[in-house]
Image 1 (cartoon, rainbow, N blue to C red):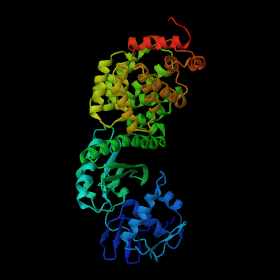
Image 2: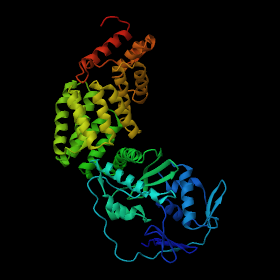
Image 3: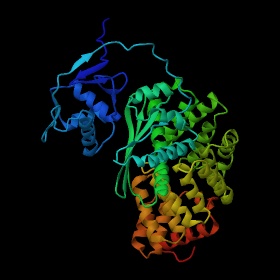
Image 4: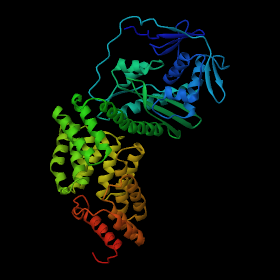
Length: 516
């Protein structure tokens, strides 16, 4: 069967768009720097020369999975015109309110690539990522030191995430000042993801744009923009690096889960079975949690020394006991505790393992040990929202209310679309209540009722907070509409006696009884 030849390059107006190299060249072979998105847009224009392309069509082609502002498209058009020295718009013409037309005569060449093709490197057994040198979009070359420092900080922060295989800075910086297709970089380095970015400074204002790309397909996974006042260079550099690293972890996890969902279950390895378990776990619900537990057990069966399988299994069992069964809460201290301890013994540098162990320690009322494990998790991965959220939880139930609230807000800021968001808000509401900040408790617990109406352990606290505020009718309505109170809660071992007493006092007040 004959196949249409693959276009290797496009020639037009004294330029060559080399598809294989991912580069724009002069007729003499000199490379003209062009950002990857701008290269892809120029490729789109050359493939549709003489045709009107509207902005929506361009956006769908260049950014198929994310929504970007008009600024992104306009910047790419500006890049192309600058590279082609087409400020007069003789080649790339704007049709007002309609789109763009690329007017030169374009000739496609289908010559096969010269020389042998180097075989692709074997992918690591966990997600692999390279942080490419960011582009300096300012007119000040001296900004290079800040940009290089930012990239190095992001690389270091990502290296703290045990689940990622991160390419070293020196290998990544070999691509500086090169316009190479990210798919070629992924193949050269054996990575599945690439982080690109640019930095623009205007006076004392700084804008950093970042985007995570699936290097196997060139598809965007995630993108964001950070605008800051440049009052303290190093503080801003550190803050942005931490913010980027904090968002990359769940973004990569989400992309990995989508990739794994396309594979038959019988072909999953330990890492993929763990990711499949996380996907089910994040969906919430009794059946989803049961599916998660089975995938975590499969990960353990495939590799008994794979720590994430053990702490995933521990977490799913703890969730089952807490949300979906009537088993005594003390059972969290049996199999889940054992599995969490195994995970930490297998890999004591895995922040997630310490965070899960912290949570389970707390369930036995061992708050100081729980706080110690959670602090270890945050030290191992300072940008990990899961560990920071768990530190907030155990601090709160251990009575350290102010730091607990700060940590939970930090987790939300790092991962604003996290599957655990409703849980973090629930913990914030409960901690506000135990700190006797009843108005804030009501505000957050009302939000939980909208996000996760099946939670049945917040109604009593919400009613209590309303009663302490003197909103007796609302408090009584919450109690009347609430599902039957779980009989295990008066014996909740993770709650301090004074917190249990405050909660019971509020429930009796809400019910109109003066005596317990």
